[in-house]
Image (cartoon, rainbow, N blue to C red; front, top):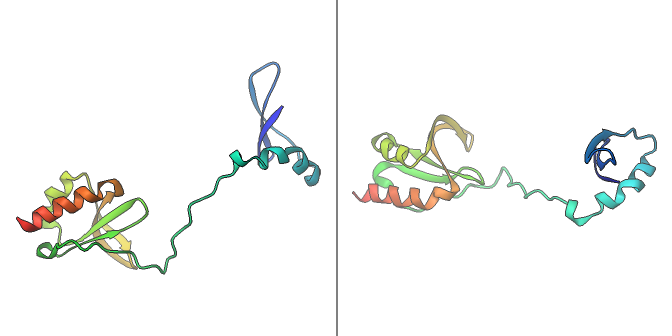
Length: 135
């Protein structure tokens, strides 16, 4: 009983051993598709990728008042935010938030120094930077 197919390989059951992965030659594509259509047509086997953001989209910035340090917090990717600006006076605070400092990453076509944080830490980063700006 064959269950899964990819690039001419199949994962199936063998009466002598539990699972086996073997290569199967494809001589006639139509017969091959007909034989494995039940696997490919199963809704459980359908995987859709998340839509990619267009390169032309402007990445949003946050509106926190970080003017004393001349900082800018931006959405760097789907999973990360970045803090740009004069971060040297508060580098220990930023390091304490478990951020990664990168001296030259590209943002909007420019190479800049920045701190990178996970999206999960976004609220914590905002609160800490706002507290530093007010102090």
